[in-house]
Image (cartoon, rainbow, N blue to C red):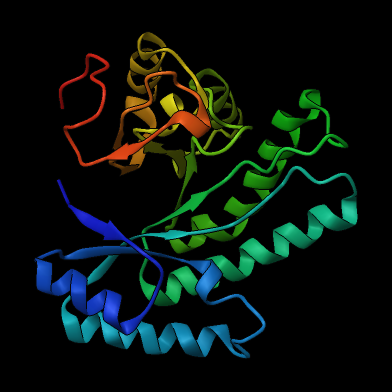
Length: 225
């Protein structure tokens, strides 16, 4: 097992991770792909040097894709954005990128979610597979907070480079019962490529009532790892 820590990129964050004793970190594309960064590739090269000097490696690189788009033009824009994310991931040496299915929007009906996600991930894998980078679908937000649906998407994509990023708190945060959380986590085990290990005390199981806690201090759903 490889343990790391997730955070927004900064030199201070990387140094802190090293001082604590971690060998791995997860950072995200949002700190590279933004107006204030004229050359994301050059920034990635500099960050790679920092990682090497500190003896750190990336466990994962976070993408911020959204394939639930109402128009073809918007969809193609997402494909180009994630292509750039993959270029950065390759420079940084990330073996996995964490991907989202998409954000909920009323103009994109639920009946279209699966098809749009599958098409988006298949297009993404055209770039990812030659680089040896895997895609890990996060159970994040409102659209992929259902392990049964996640597994449907992963199977429909049909690639060994497609799997899951399992966030251990998100199912309960969304409002699922502890019994369902346990079942969902067990369903995702065969597909898990990366994990966000978190805990919480969401007694009502509803978003605003959910309180994050230190590991081991949340509600027990019945799984020991």
